[in-house]
Image (cartoon, rainbow, N blue to C red; front, side, top):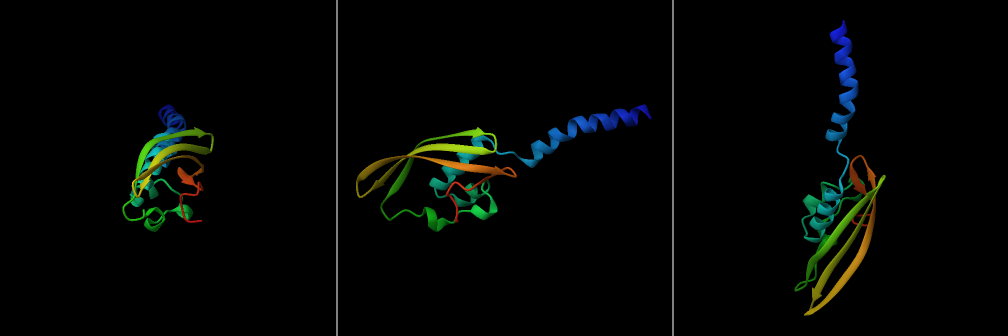
Length: 121
């Protein structure tokens, strides 16, 4: 009986940590990977971290012919159930490079990034 009580007690203490690890709360690194992948045109990789309702498609991130985006900086910070990502990219088109700095704010739901205007609305 004592072994059974000890086992149940241990399970009650350990189980929440196992569920949290498997359930997958999204990290700042994961959010940075998602934003980077989207800018690189790797839609499948980006969508691993994005809510189903906000999945992006390739057409949204297609660049005009002869242009390119260079990622200068991506930094994401988690604040409770929000993920805020600041990024700076350099957009080059027809020989002219324009730096662009913006922020994205995501809601975190079920370990995924939701909203943020990255996906189809």
